[in-house]
Image 1 (tube, each protein chain N blue to C red):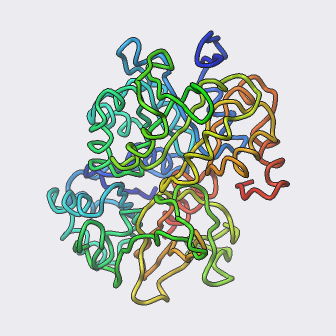
Image 2: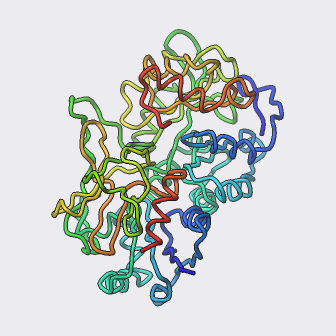
Image 3: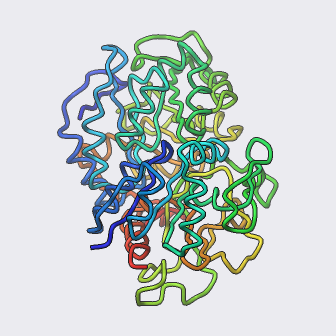
Amino acid sequence: MIKGIQLEGLRIVGDPGEFATKYYNAGADELIYSDIVASLYGRNSLLDIVAKTTKDIFIPLTVGGGIRSVNDVETLLRHGADKISVNSAAIQRPELISEISSRFGAQCCVVEIQAKSIGKGKWMALYDSGRENSGRDAIDWAWDAIERGAGELLITSIDRDGCRKGMDLDLLRRISLRSAVPVIASGGVGSHSDICEAVFEGNVDAVAIGDLFHFDRATVGEAKEYISRQNINVRL
Amino acid sequence: MKKIGVLDYGSGNIHSLAMAVRKIGRDVDLITSPEQMWQVDNIILPGVGAFGRVMQKLKDKGFSDELIAIIRAKKPVLGICVGMQVLFEFSYEFGKQEGLGCLEGSVDEIPRYDINGNLNRIPHVGWSDLIYQREDEAVEGIGELFCSVNNYESFYFIHSFSVSPANSSISVAHTIYGGHVLTAAVRQGMLFGTQFHPEKSGSVGLKVLENFTCF
């Protein structure tokens, strides 16, 4: 398992299976596996990790990275993924979203949007782990993805990823307030109160957390207890 | 030891369901032909995606008629998510579609607006409280699907449609989304259904699966 800052400077954190088990036992609601360099190398190598994970872990698992076709999705689902997330291939060929959604149902199709701020109230959608600029406005791309059958949006703020300074609330709010599908926020959680802000001010349905837990700065249980005390309805 | 059959007809997360059943210490058979259904003690019918597609696959593999016969013969059957929805008479997903008709009622879209008139995000994804229709649903002893599971435990849901049983007494538990009551579990004799995914609901989910295998 690796983690970077703004999707760069990746450092090795440890074995993904061990972390998955730790988070499951600590009460995580869902896991997201993201092969963040898959698109760059044109590979899809998460299968073994996915199959091993679902032997002992009985919460939903979303898998992303390098998915280019309906067949890729089918293989991942057969190995135990519950949902898949697409970014790069969907930007290059948006029909992929409707193909996945009509074949496996919208509930299985998460579209990740990697948003990079380019000025006040403006974000571009990037791909290939934030290395390439699609030239598309991130928020327009969100509406397009929903229209095409995305069942959930995973909004990653590239500017905030790994920075521990809070989430991009402006970005999240602009998408969440008008989204017809659930929104998962990612990038920037540095403290428990950042999670609450994303929910109360960003209006999101879920928050994906890496850094805070990966480096043992907090446990899943502590985070949940904190946000529960702030009146956020969460499974304890 | 009891043998649990999981229908493998190209829809649903067979892998994690089989793992979950193994985790609770039961034998699992992946069922790929209709005759095999008679050789197991209990049957789990998974299902994800569109109602019409799930029904079509059941028919294509010759499962639908045999499944109706199995249910008439009172072998315990558990439908999960769309696997429960197809047990009903019809669905309104992409026009009116016919189901197996083992349970009376229909499958309808989750209301697009919450009770305050705000947009209800659909699909309904995530962990929601399971609320029993009867207080004593979790009584100890073999024979109840929710035995030893507390009222208001959270289970994992992921769906855009939900069942409306014609006879409300078959509804065992519900959940609330956007202020609307959604049927979460049904039982009619030895036929069971859950809208939530027990195989994805952590230890309480495994307990529900274990309870089902005790029938």
